[in-house]
Image (tube, rainbow, N blue to C red; front, side, top):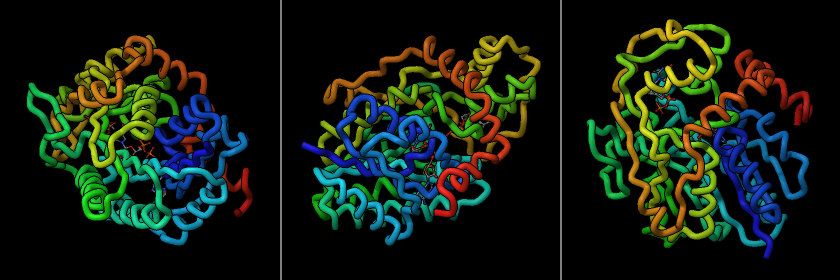
Length: 342
Ligand code: NAD
Ligand code: TYD
């Protein structure tokens, strides 16, 4: 049976990795990718798959019902069962501290617009990609489970929690077939270099200082993006509607430890570490209990940090042009060059 998957935010970091993975693991699936191409969206990320049959790109905004309708029309035209995987979001905590309103617009309003259209188009399964940050911060011990109360601390995580609650409401009120996934910090190819790992790889490669917030002892659980994408596919295909699934990498590291590993891998001196003013409201520690998705769907991370970190560092070295175009802003000309003014 044919299957069409409407992906939102597929020109971003995780979305583009997901689209690549679909082309590899589910080549028969058709993909419609709805993306507004904000500063974080980069069509170059899709170059490896863009020309494959069954791949469509729709330039549009999830907060604009007409744009969402265009994407659904494209998906309906491809035929078969229809599902949605929703990545599109404003995703960077530091930007949300500077200005929260775009986060509410895209993450909260955009999710509702998408839910309304998905119900109208009788979508069979909707996967909402969320974050462990909705649970707030942990002390030195313990893990987030799916039952941990929501206690978001940043405008970003508060807007993601808002979107999670709207998905929950659609399930409860309308019997909508949706799952929510909450994952830890991703790393891997195509990550926008405002996030810590690509930022430190880019700076270290150029011998520039690496800004470490506060005492550098903040802990994150690092998840390889390919593992995350495979977990989302498992939820899409086998997740129980109405359920939340936590996804983690079993790989907690303090920021300073991570920086030192990257510097060592690149053969750069620790003197590049520069302590800077802390992020306001900085969550101390995130850690995920991913036993539910392991038990119910048989998913567990396949990649160890020891193999995936060097692989990631290698990817950025081999894609110096990509990194340079993203850092200089030149990637934004790509759409015009490739597609004219369409
Ligand atoms: P990203 O910032 O790299 O990409 C976001 C994509 O969404 C971009 O392509 C952008 O153009 C698009 N977009 C933004 N606003 C839009 C709008 N209004 N309409 C249509 N498209 C729009 O983000 P990412 O890191 O790939 O994250 C993807 C999802 O995963 C997000 O929902 C994020 O909250 C969640 N998440 C990310 C991480 C992580 O470590 N990166 C961790 C947990 C959860
Ligand atoms: P980030 O990649 O922004 O992800 P998140 O805030 O969603 O976890 O940051 C990861 C960690 O690195 C977080 O503790 C903040 C810290 N950090 C720095 O120390 N320096 C930086 O320049 C950035 C961007 C983040």
